[in-house]
Image 1 (cartoon, rainbow, N blue to C red):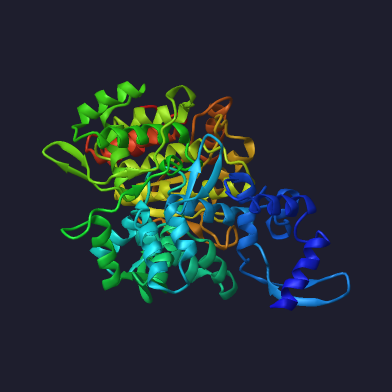
Image 2 (image 1 turned 45 degrees about the vertical axis):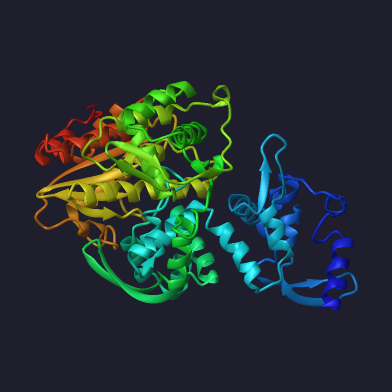
Length: 565
């Protein structure tokens, strides 16, 4: 251990792992009698041009936690040692920091953007490792975090649930930042991959909520509240059946006792829940700040007494919030699926939890977002269709900052489109979305639709290259020859399907899109249409509510123009 410490100190001095300025800043901060450190110096500055793998340590929390992978390090004297990377990246450090704040081990001052240790944090720091005192501190911390209660509650209802089962029921559905991959898609991707690719699918095929569920279940496993096992899961996708071994989670008796303790009984009061403002929406969601504000004010309103939807709506006007009751209802559903206990009885909502840590900003600093306004207007018109598909509006307007994030949103756009058609509207088909395949193909009876999903925040005009791509797919579907395309994607359609159309789905359409639709129709002999995500949802609502037949719906894609409802 001494050899390792001297070696690491040498690397620090040589500025190989940390810069001299950051090292001195850490020492200065940690030498204070009362530590209240800025969030930035705890988290770190980010990888920059070096990338996450090669970035230096720039945050105190980064320095506390070892990385997961071992590496060879060599000092100036040629001495080499193989150790785990002696610090983590800023993204992981941020996760640990947010967890400590959310569980009440640290207190966060939003005015100074700084953190200091809480009384519970001091208790944990002074407790000996692997003692009842340490476990009691960790229990108090974890049981004050609503998503922990949500996962325990879900497992209390049913054992042996996978991360996909749990992720589908965790968080604000219909929003970016809380996505869940359908388990059938994971099984398809995994079973059709070669052994090398299977490892990548296992690591990367998960939505944000799936990832959160897996992480929380891992914490609870370490507490002895949850146990994991490997189970065989079988599901169907694209007309094929797939089966694989997946990790599943079950609650233990200790977990049941922890949940009872959290919710209170005759012997113990209910443990207050810590709700940080930032956890009320993901930064990925359109109008995230506005969503947080609305949800925080709903919590504040319900904290003052039981209310009907109309009473909540009236109370929110005092916070300068004007939203319809459907939006309020969706917000409340989302608050329950992040772990708050809100009871609905005799037309009134009752918040059973005492809330700590929620600081609501002034309404004049809240920035409204057009996409959020669009979603609220559409939400009010959806009575039959599941509101989780409002995420299609977010995805169509996606303005992802990196290629990787844009590709992830595009994939999610395809998945959710296929999911809506097949799960909500009883169509057949699936997302294809790989190289040399259409994004989505669906059919009902004899009508088939070849779909191209396009995420464009500022509108989409159908470039010539995209038009030619659809023409190629139409031609491949007509001829169905492996010489044209060996992957035979057209097999997604039933043999009875003999009437085909094409569709572009995006945020909105502009420019020459009408000319491109005419061009595709004349070249291919097949008619199609452009449809915004908003109008797609309205069309789906008409079908789901039984006001429009499937034949009428598919006939709309004959117009070679934009479909507007």
